Amino acid sequence: MKIEQALKLIRDVPDFPKPGILFKDITPLLSDGEAFLAVTQKFSTFAQSSTIIAGIEARGFIFASAVANQLGAGFVPIRKAGKLPYESISATYGLEYGDDELEIHKDAFKPGDKVLLIDDVLATGGTIGAAIDLIHEIGGEVIHVLALLEIPGLSGRERINQLHPQIPITSFMNS
Image (tube, rainbow, N blue to C red; front, top):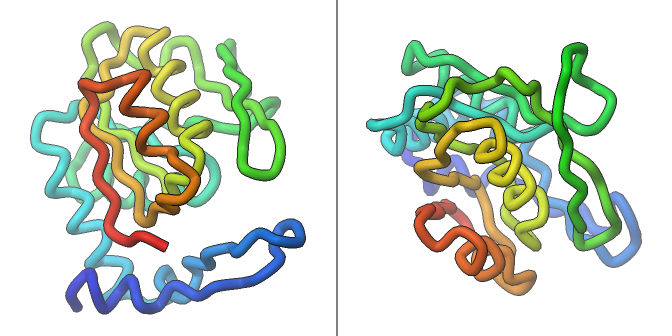
């Protein structure tokens, strides 16, 4: 299956999690083995110089862990506050419908680790921006950001490019 066919499986769910939000439901894509494989194989092509794959909770985990497995690379979860069992650092960020907080273990990366960062959606850039900051704070170097889909009207790409112009961003679908 080609990635374009896989992306067609994503469905819109209006007014979730709040009225006025159009949620992009990736579960039909995930439940189709060929579609899921097409996406993770495409993501894997961006990992040539990565030493580790990081994924943002919760749906970014799904893709990042599968990519890490395909590559035989390590996987680092970037989680919402209070979910990690060991010493961690955190960053607060804004969403299109509120504020949230991400955490990462203090020892998740060795200095100089090259990190491929994966999330499902690039919207306002708050979540991905916070993840980049956390990775850099503990010594990792984000070499590429991947998102399955992007919502251009929320200017997330522009926000990340202003703060981190050296990091390329790739998304496979605009909504």
